[in-house]
Amino acid sequence: MTVSMVLFWALVIGGVVAVVRYLGRETRSSFTSPQHTPEQILAERFARGDVDEEEYRRRLAALREHSA
Image 1 (cartoon, helix red, strand yellow):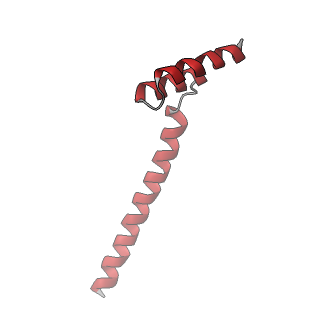
Image 2 (spheres, rainbow, N blue to C red):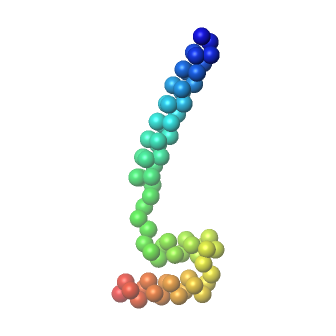
Image 3 (cartoon, rainbow, N blue to C red):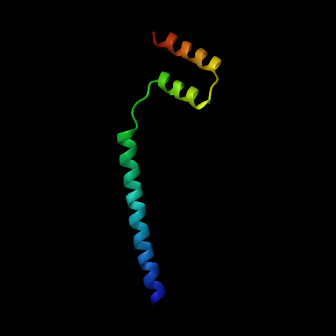
């Protein structure tokens, strides 16, 4: 009987934690994810080191060429 009571409360607490995390993630992502322009995304990738300077300049020129 003691084991079933502990298991019951563990499931209740786990369910509450799961619901709070799910709702918190959904709310945060809808309010904190601003729309970035392609140039901003490319600049962030360059800052992280995902692309080198040559590739950054080439892609930036291509983006500006197609947006004009």
